[in-house]
Length: 153
Length: 270
Image 1 (cartoon, helix red, strand yellow):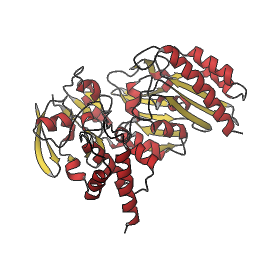
Image 2 (cartoon, chains in turn purple, green; image 1 turned 120 degrees about the vertical axis):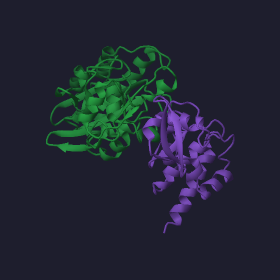
Image 3 (cartoon, one colour; image 1 turned 90 degrees about the vertical axis):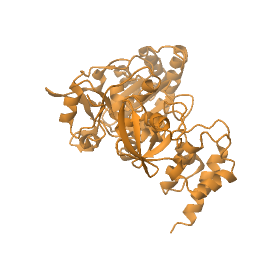
Image 4 (cartoon, chains in turn purple, cyan; image 1 turned 30 degrees about the vertical axis):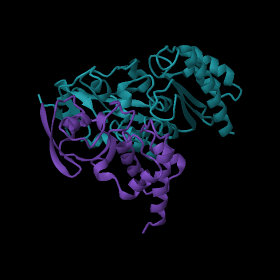
């Protein structure tokens, strides 16, 4: 067992992990439920986080290589306008995939580009939702993007 | 032995490699069997801190891509100079995979389905391998020896791939069940430069290794070569049946893809 210190949503925590343990498992096994995990092969995107500014699946990173890393999850990345839009468009049903979709959506919105239906679909293609049929999620992201583009300083 | 080594130079990395540590960069391939409990690791050689592996350089003859360059970088930075490679890069996994997955990982993993391998073969790429006793380069077409087997020696590190020639009209295409997160059922890359009489065709997921098919060159350069070309390409393939597709379907898809891409090339080069 190794000890790895990371910053999780602004809070310094210590993870216990073997070399083979993914960041996702190490975080959950240390008692933090900021990230859900599902496929653990990079397919579903539910464990999506931002590590030192790069959006990636936390199941595909060994915890031990994340020493001193700044890990941000839905807990610190979700903005109020996106939360409202998700609620308005029925973008959340069972909610399992939501943390991952929020991280992917915030990354797409942070790019500052004017997004289209197709580009949003492409940006969210690494995340799987089994309830909503995606339309609500895509509409929510498009609405926030449009609003932010119009109110750009 | 520590569980993690993060050297900042290739020389240091080679010393760690000799200790038997497992190489990791993006992790998107390496971690999957580990999460499934099929493999375990005692010690990592993390390449993410080696700056020299993350550089794309224009050389006098060609473009040198460091093994640690991500597909996200290739997708944007090589869009105009190596369009088929950028196109293939943009189909790898999903955005979050491309943010970390590297071209060196794709090459070293040597899957017959590796998306970037076909354009690299079509560009006459060479790989650079560095070991404690020195460096060597070899054509990418000689690097692959079988499914997930390469001629890299255990004490060597793949440090870069150099594109020798990316001129001409070119396309990459693959068949899969959806647009993202797909391991291709069959894939193809073609490049023709009619002025210089150069043509290349490479096919993926239809043989034990990604396949460069030199016999296809003459027919690629002929406008009316499509049907003869597709027969030749299918004959050169030796696909297997697995949970993704039966061999017969792969042959069928390869035939259609070859004809379609030939047509597209010739429409564009008129």
